[in-house]
Image (cartoon, rainbow, N blue to C red; front, side):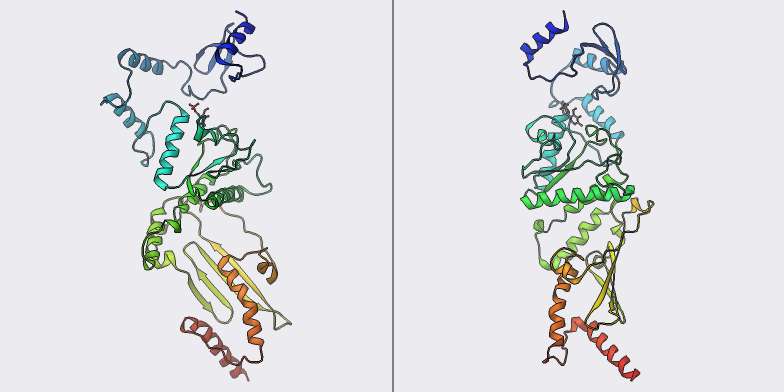
Length: 398
Ligand SMILES: Cc1ncc(COP(=O)(O)O)c(C=O)c1O
């Protein structure tokens, strides 16, 4: 039979649209180990197929399948030692987090089950996926394919550019900064799903990014992306309880997140995990500690204009334990004017921006003719102390 006649019969029996590789289709009739053989006996190295990952016609696999076919072929709703022993053996090949299995007949089905589990566990619908992936061909999983070719407007899915050092998203970055640039894309996808109301159920990726072309993934990308996804679990909308118990709930959740990819929260007190700890160094420095960061803030008087000041904010961030061996580059310094914050072009984080917004009014109030005394509440004892200390020093000097 010629290739042409087999092709014509195929088009008839399977339909014209059934995908076929190569302009000159191969008629492959046999596989063995790493090789495929065509009808003329020509041997090819199989660089493509992933299903027979232990080799074509592997005798151990063929033997086990033949024995089972010849004995019993039913579903798994009867008690049977075989499936239990198989699951137990699989478990020994994985880390302790994986202790039980749901078996399926295809990759598509496995990913369907994974999506269902993630959605059931989180109560959210949104799925984050890479823009070069393929996860299968069912309705739910099929939506996640072809992200690069077509942008989806479906509210329950959001793609991110797959991580790649060879054709990086941003050029000129070192590996760690590039990993951060890709994690920022994960953050974008998280926000997108939160803004549609779907929320985030999961991030789904092939563990070797096979369909993306086996890219060189920047080290730490997966650990950082996974840490981000775990943090999404801290969703205020999910909290049910008394206002006074919120701090405790946050501390409990943060400790639960503590593992080798997240910071070591376990050794902090509830207060250290939830509160901002502020220390003032007279006359012009504020140290503000959170569990993961330290802000060093310093007001510097303008050399000639008493109505102006320069305000420095230096941010130091605590890194996950697993990343600490890799040095990070020092981030650049950004310099901008007060009005850039007011116009929303620059941000010094939302809390500082809110304070900055008030400064103009405070300053014009202090310059007004009616202002002669400042009255401050107990919470502002540090500001009172600042004024008292300032007066004392000025008076001493006179
Ligand atoms: C990474 C990945 N996931 C899922 C699938 C879907 O598997 P199946 O064709 O068995 O449904 C494939 C298929 O090639 C795949 O490459």
